[in-house]
Length: 555
Image (cartoon, rainbow, N blue to C red; front, side, top):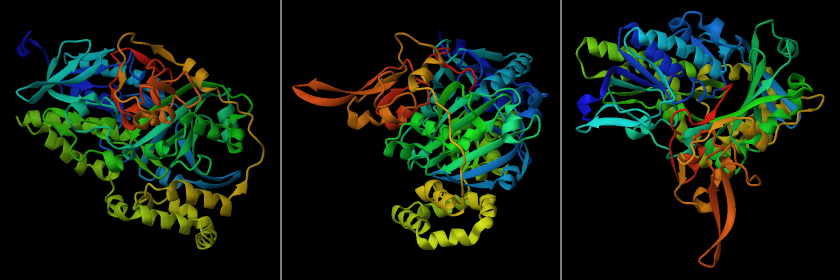
């Protein structure tokens, strides 16, 4: 078969998450023949988020604006309260984040990705069918189709290549299409966060009773300080309709450097006495999951396009994490809508400059400044310099620094509620560990009571997940199995641990050429497809084929 005989669509959208759904909806509304492909057995079965979905007043696109009835049918609870807990042992200083949580925000809902994305996918399929396209699940887009060096479509594991006038890559942080185009790679652990999450069942009426929220409303609680063994990052708790999403998000370079084990850090949060008031004595974990998260301050691509290829969402590094501000899905929606809009506009002008038009729209709509604040870029070189960061940390923990904290007192809350200041926060130990700990020690109150939570062990967490293992087709290969090259994966992988033999990565001592050598072995069956090992180990990594691998029920 020649290239001329390949099936053709005006647009191919890869990935049926929020960004892909937004792109497909806008394309279909403008009568663009659109094919959407999703590698999971169902949209959302491969997706994990914390997750809060924000709809900002200035956003060019929101999901409720694109899909009638979205909030009533596909989200969990409107989150109307938000708090930051600065933890120092069993002393906690709590800050109300209402100002920063609501500023410029039309609404904020908690979501679970399996339910939300599946609902969106049904509507996307209906819209796309009207223009001659539709949605295909269990299809893995593995690369780009080229002709004379130019991108002209997409290649798949399960289908013949498909030609397209535009390709929207909404295939996540580990996007094969972005990497094939040379627009991203896994070069630096400091560019990523790793998120690990447990979805916890709650008895009927317990959320309103335990969190003190009105019926049908919810709350967000964030955690920082000394309960994470010095790893840069923090924890979160979001109320869903009848469950809680509880997790941790850490800078991957810090997690790797400290040789910390993600599931142990999550357990440290779950068992802290502060959470006893919410978790009670009836803890039941429904699902354990993990993902990599791009740090948009470093990874949001300023030119997320190449030829006919447009990147949106995590594939373009569009995840905003600045202090307690964690926003990603809303930016993916805006980018997806703007990518579609750029193609429609370029087609109307008979122009080939769809990528440049998309890039300009991202800038003009303010998306890029949210993702890569100018003030952060200006301050980073100084604030994150090793010597300066060390001095800042020492001052924050000194008598002088503590006196300053005591003098500020209640005024600390206004600093945490400043969008401007949060956009300048450096990614250092001082911000994530030292200052929250000092706030807890100097301004905090002791936590009463103790936790009775007994989290499942790692074997039970893995055993509770659904897998369709692709026997004979492992999607990860260790290229250098020496512990020096790939041993970090043993601790950083969220389904592995040094003293656990049932995960993806295991360390062992073998004899080679008469000498003992510590090496790493791999079993891809328990993999949750987060991509951590692609960054911290020497591997060849790709997604499993369509419909294979892990399937999340909650997400």
